[in-house]
Length: 302
View 1: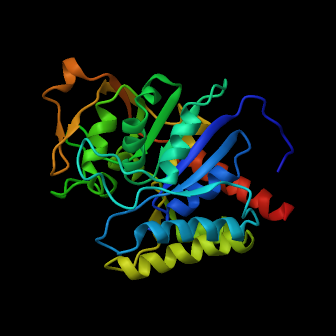
View 2: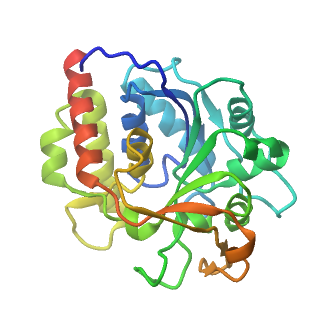
């Protein structure tokens, strides 16, 4: 990897339900390998209790495993987020990861803060309740979550997974004045990559490359109903957009509310809510190839 320095790096916090599936891992490693991003912390997020009873602890363990495999353990702050969804719209769930978000958001520095949420928005909503002035700071929330707009599918009759794990928090963040960039499900599902490409470009890249591909294939075998040879790296757009905010097409629309079936409620949005940025497409080639090249250079350097 070329030895470059960047004088105005974006401050970044990654909030991740890292052991929920097999794609958070790729996004975390991509962020860690991107020299223009100043990673201020990795926050472990819960992912409900439908798949496991210890989701927060499993997310934390997975983050720490990735750092060990990259020989970066101890060099990036890691914190627990909230262990469960908000109980109601007036009760924050304090956690070290929430404190980290508040601290970074309120720092008087020139560089903007990007907080990427690869799971539920619990910790951002808690941070807002504990320190409402965050909404006035140069903070951008990038959220991988929510269903499609204007009839975009798939429509399966239930809330998108990240949204479903804390609909109350999503409503609090969307109704705030924070800058929000949303990557809804039909967009993040554009990030498919095949086993053949992963075997050629990721698996040979040291311990971390081998692990990324192995855990992805194992997850597919356990969780998918039939034989497949691809995976959607749906969390990686959060990293791509921090590197290149226009590596996708987007529109601004008044922030909607979320009903409890996961559908959008626009009834009050038009006049009451500030606009958010909603990405309708994403440049998978840019994001995948940037990751592959950085991982290869990292492995060669090691």
